[in-house]
Image (tube, rainbow, N blue to C red; front, top):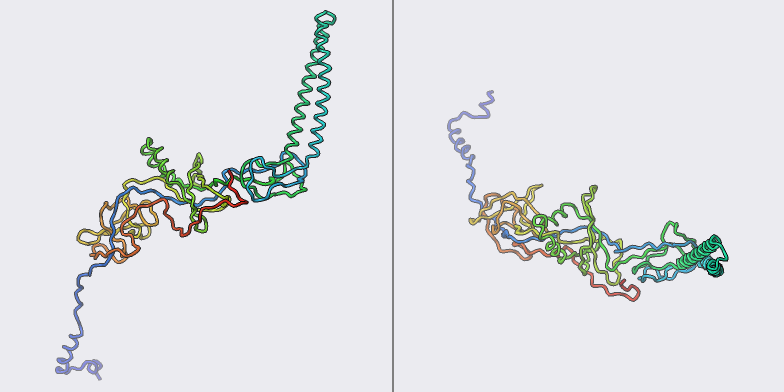
Length: 417
């Protein structure tokens, strides 16, 4: 039997019926119609002076930290201060056993009395020798001997007086006092402990914490940004510095609380570290009530210069693909052009664009993921909470949501003056 004849019948009538049916199974592909406009929210490229707000991590330190060490050796017999309280300069902190030093002072005073008595006798002999020399009763040599003896006695008295003063100073050192106004720390030695100037630890520490100091590291790029305007026009350096200082610093504590007091720049190191590429900067914040303590970590925000006439767009308008930044620019005909741009500094809400756009141009802010180059868009009104147009940045810009109220000095923790 022929295989082909069984599968494909040769009947002309049947083929005439099947061929039109088979041809009707092949349909032509539909022609794509025009793409509908993409609904988006637009914003505008604006031009303004853009303060460069920066943020760093710092830690709090006392403006002065004094290590309280003994100047004399002996046993601690009393502690006067309460640990963790504010003390005044000169206030007693510890008492070292004064008995040996009192004895040394008494001995020095006795030696001085003996020397003074000896000086009186020698002085009388010297005066008599002067009279005898005038009457030519004694020789010049005898007179000179009396004179030298008197001068030696005077020097001995001066030495004994210095010994008395030294013994008095050592006795005074047995009472260890606060070297500065500040917050006294925990005592490292208890009553009865023998201490000396060679002791491994200080007796305690006293830290001046009102104002309190915050120390942080500023990268060299931020530093260059800070001085860029002054480099272009050195005559404006003082004005630029005053402008940034007027804005001041703000501090956000590690739990997100915004510290209510404004800080000021205090000092910067004299060189940039070659190991870290950063410079150490210090600021100070008022600390009423001595509530903030050294060792706390905090975020510090400050202004490091102003970029003048910067082109600003909402941060939501920036399309980022790996290291490439783009904007969807909308023309008068509502057609989109995707442009590659160079991105400058950014904040939480805004971005500085360095190239490829002009002030006043329209850009897509919401719906960037739906647009492609050449497509047509349908502008929509801005939704609630959206910011299609950049807003002015301020130094108070932060993501923190809570504020700490101003501190009120407590009875036990009065602010250090």
